[in-house]
Image (cartoon, rainbow over all chains, first blue to last red; front, side):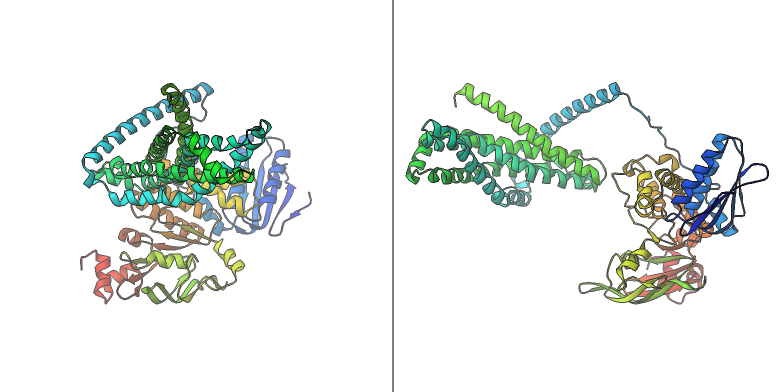
Length: 381
Length: 252
């Protein structure tokens, strides 16, 4: 006879019967919150036995048993069945027998398609490539749909939902001013500060102004603003449209005969394209102010800063920058809406779409920026 | 706890209002241990609202609710949460966690509130899925199965910790008659075999006759309970014509 193990509410006593069978006597309360120790102990005792010995569970002194107790008994029965030994439960009070009845006569549903438990590496690679290809095809189709909807809107301006356009303009443009201003100011400050030291070694510190002006207007203004747009509005578009998709609102639009792209995407894309140049100009101004702060602290005058900035820039630089900005706005808004409408079902799907909208948006911005650099260089702008 | 006859849930003088709009006032009733108790009424009469108050999700304007003698509206928060752990709730939409498969959904309460080993948790969770006939769907995501299956899985999750009371919000809404009847059989079996007390919100007549031991009927105009008792008796003998109309499915 082995020593009994006491837990706060249930206990297990292990003994050997006359024919060498293992007798597990459970006592007290068997419920999910307190059963863990005796469960492990019972499994341990079973594991120590040789295969063919029978097991008898004595449940006569169980005062309470819920499905955790049932789980324990079924678990022990399963272990015994695998090792080929006999198993019996004695003395379980009738009021707990109902637990067993719950499993009788049930008719489980079977999935129609058995899923493959394991996919090979080549299979996974192949699936990913196919998905990537399909994603590209879908994006091209979406761009086509968007172009046709945009053209339609151009010829039917009265049918465009202007209220949505103005609201989106406010969200995309006006509400973004504080963050765009702050980040651009700091970027201007940082560029000027980092440039001041190496340029100072050549005694060329007054060219800090040229550097700040050219890099901000041609490159960093549009780029930073577009990245902020992708994080703020691209994500918001994807989340909005994604939630609408999950709630079947997009399907409802289609069945009413309203193409979702015309109804939902056109307003957002036009607002983003319209607002981006203004946001970018705002960003350039604040960047130049940031650079100016450093420039003045180097001991130069305000007048000299303005003179250097004006001399360094041409009108083409500004126009090129604003054109880039509008293009980035188009990309970010299109990709945000595209990912939103691609959303599958479930709450986590919206999160996935939002992430993909931002990642795809920023990737496209940087790639397009590289293309623009080459084109502008070849055109001599 | 004093015997089987004692009431398990006591709702006294409950009034609920949103702003100036009173949903119902002075609602009192009790639910007995082991019975299937159905709250019914037309759309917008506050059935789901009443249920949300009974499980402590909303604060009522007035009144008290006690589960197993423990006041859950104004009571001690620690004791209240211990009571709430002993109840299971199935929400109207199922509210399964979309990022987890069915087995993980059912395992979650067991992982959080017990110290069972992983194997034991899986054993119990699979058993609960087996009770609702979904054991072969254990590794499916909620979005991959039908609405009826989602509701059954939600019942399995609500039963994870062997609650003594199960609250079901419109379990058969939107289901086909066969699935809905299967759900009724499941509720009856759970009630008979495990002695679980059910509080069910529904307005599906066949379900009401199949499962209800007792019903209360709420009314939008009168802002309160207009009938209590066995649904068959209410259908045939209630003096209020609107109650008889409801049970006989007649237009007003």
